[in-house]
Length: 154
Image (cartoon, rainbow, N blue to C red; front, side, top):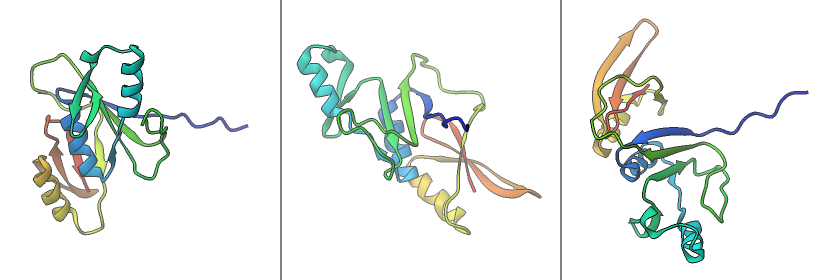
């Protein structure tokens, strides 16, 4: 019998989880998860204190966490939580800017032959070009998101 594949999400430590979620939702054409129905319910029950919540955009959001999900994946309508491919951004206490290379990164694969156009789009969203790589195995651009996390565009 084949075991059931595990559900997973990629968690990214962040200085500003909502800015990161906004960037990555735009970069990936994903959807920022709307947790406001759950937050409203929990606040109404007194189950969470109001200081755990902020206003972001036009809705309530968790102060220290935000997430994005693939728009075609299922989600729980009561909590807003994605049930498939998603990125979760958690606030971390470190105040210093990231200074070392990621141990894990995302590779983005846009339409064939349009890497430069994709790099331009991502730069307009707030990413920066770190370096261009050309090797016998291929060519790609290493970029950083607004908080300095590396990712590659192929």
